[in-house]
Length: 552
Image 1 (tube, one colour):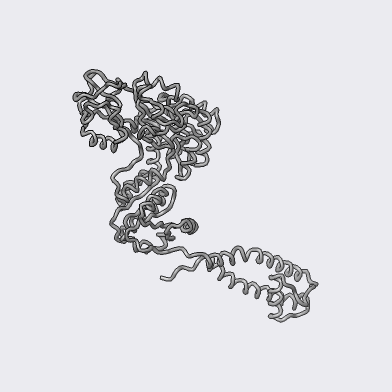
Image 2: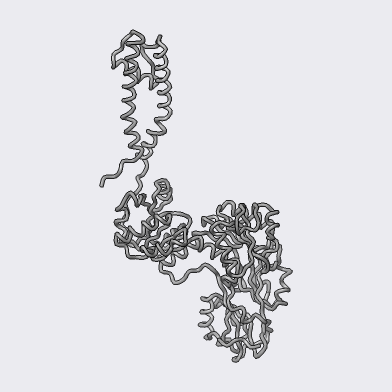
């Protein structure tokens, strides 16, 4: 099948046809005018020469004056037409043709697809997936309909194929041997992509991103393995960050709730905690609390040992008695867990966030620039009086669900200046802007590419888990190899990452372990850590969880 003639080539061919024709027409008119109006006949060839000289503004030879008004108008019109052609001919016809001749040609057919992933349509939603595939060494090809977008991706080093499924029926003829397919275009184009790929014999995983959740079932019926709505994935992740009712980050705390409490504290830059190592602070010895970890740049970092450095601006997560936690409130600012959750931006993502929060029983206040149903405060989130009307100072968290990354970064700076302690969560379109949001003071920033990319990578790379939230678990365990040892001398945290936070002895729960305290065989030990850390603890100390409820 011959390659189609490019648009710039067609335009240049028409120019080469029409320009001589125009010169002939003008030459004919000049010949008639000189014969019947001026009484000074010219041959057709001489007249054509005049037309060419006039259009190109090179001169007229012996013909320099005319007597009849109509001849003067013909000459003037021809001169103006010549100037117009000179101005337009090069940028509109010649230069595009030359650019296409000298630039690298876009690939119009699929390369060998053995073991590669084909992504139809590039956008921020698949950016993180593309980067993850590259890190894993998985080959990928991007199919783009727009030539300009395809050239940009090619210049960034991606393997790109440019083509339109509606115009090139055989574009996916080599797709059967691909490892997986991902469609990220509009829902209609995605549906066509799925059907055509299946028709060409692809039987592997076909993952689709769609805008309308109502299209999920139809896309699965025509051949998609799984269909996701990126805006809903992002909304769920944002809501889970703001509300522990949706995704409790500290599971099992109720087991020790009557004896211990969990506090979250922001470390101010002038706090005595800032910049110091955990071993220097002696929090367990001086305050009878156990520091579980700290949120830094949106990531939860578990305490690994005495050398752990407390980062300025971090959110500390500590467990201890209420009295113990109150003692360190003066050293670090407690995080408010009362009040509404303020959501700024009521687009597709913002609406879904509010829906999830309200379904979980959370009180919400919605800020948006346009009045509409569901908006509580109409105003600009960049203005302090709008934040005051929304009660930001009394909120327990704020979510920035703005659709523009630049507006989101600036809004985060404004909100952080308004309230330095409010937990601030922000959505991002492009992953590189996540770092900028952390720089201006956001506690958590999530890009649509990060959350959608992890879900898709889970299927494409066949990973065992999907990590969107850091979660700690409190577990009651038998003493195991702790018997006869002081809890802090066992170095459980250093060896496993799980922390010993309390010991139940009879009806008492001991939090502050004095130097002479020794774990007995009939004690129950409370530990806290992530699931992998807990598994290491079980193996290291030869123990298991105790299922019986705590008696008190």
